[in-house]
Length: 148
Image (cartoon, rainbow, N blue to C red):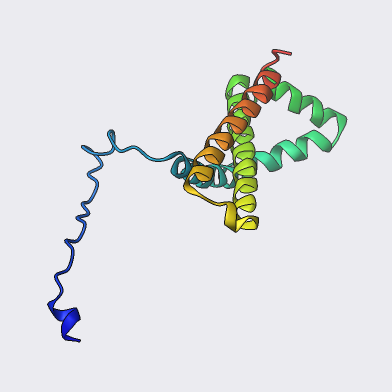
């Protein structure tokens, strides 16, 4: 008991709060942290755009006339909303789904292979997640905007 009381303790690490105005621009988040934050943002975006998803699903399958309205909304707009804005919202939804899906697969893989999870694996899988989701979003975005 006296050995514990008499031994000097190593100095404690100092933690400081991050000032949002001064430190946020210089703070370097690791790729795994970026994927984690984007995973939450994409989930929230999908939840927020749920009425838009339901509208798209309903108008696309109700009848031939409503499907023509659906196509016209993406081409020329709907009411006061231009068609380009509807396509941009759909592109945001595409990104949110693809990123959430790929990041979810990453998390499932890490849950299944506990022994393979290292710092290096976290970094490389996070970079792969970002790359795959961005490339798939670009490919589907080009299709959405009529490039092919």
